[in-house]
Image 1 (spheres, rainbow, N blue to C red):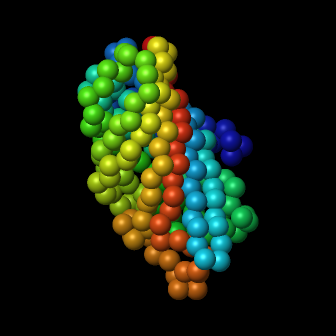
Image 2: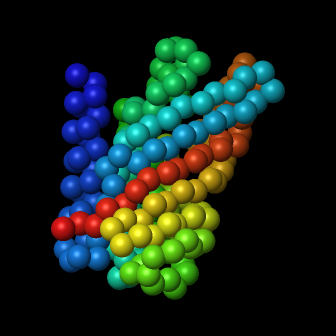
Length: 187
């Protein structure tokens, strides 16, 4: 049941993203991108993964919009840790998604296959707090798809996520995030 619900939520997010763009053959999208995060603190390493990243890129104006449901993360050290993540830190019922919307800075020809290093500049929002962010990304462009990968950090204090003193040795203030997905052309 949870899998169907997560898929449905992902589809709703993508539909919402799609309605904000003009339809043409320059739209590329994903509904199953992978997001990993890791907190490496002195007493504990916490890792979790979601395969529910949904998003769209318009290669004409280089604008993009991506979202991942926070409740879709799996792989914590314990079921209780996942509950604390969703209820105490991220407050997923109140702030269900992390989003990143913006534009690719570099001028590249998306119709020319090859490997490119670009910067995605926009607004990153998590826990209801939106901040400007520039993320370096590797693109591998083929005739039919765009593979995207990125590694960046999120500081909890930048998003009003507080670490209680009792767990400050188990939860890092800086979270490492890895994103990998394939964008396919909207037809």
